[in-house]
Length: 174
Image (cartoon, rainbow, N blue to C red; front, side, top):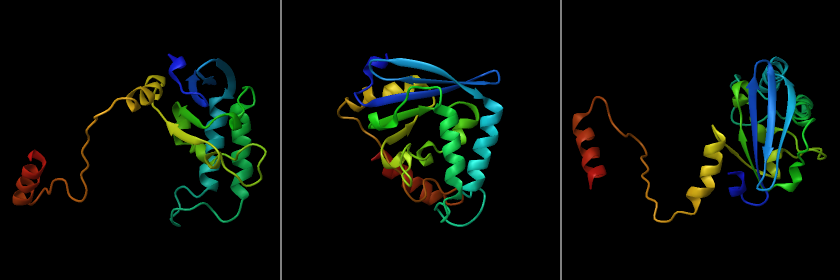
């Protein structure tokens, strides 16, 4: 099924197996697996990176002004990918399928290898998927035409306003 991945797109999966973290990179032509290391050490490192970028502190939607967090994020990136053959600059898009505590890691904030200030998101489109099947399905569905969807903004249902609920239901039905 990975042959369905577009050129210059990679699917990177991480799987927790006991206390080990196993990484896999799949492209349309190749699949490679590696042992990343102990999941407990990565859990600690992820926590340090999240703390360093200010998760849990109220200060707005931005990264800290200083670059102190980058060193920890770079060590984390190196630990996750050091046993792999991945070279990020060969891809236009990477779909991450994380497992366990890696769901908390914003991969797009990992420093781009070889660049002093650039992040992964500055060079590569990043997507996330809960399973490899969903990662592949995105590209299959993109080719289908005449897809319909709905968007609801503001109040969808007002728990204490029966008249407004009925008006919204009428609008959706028509």
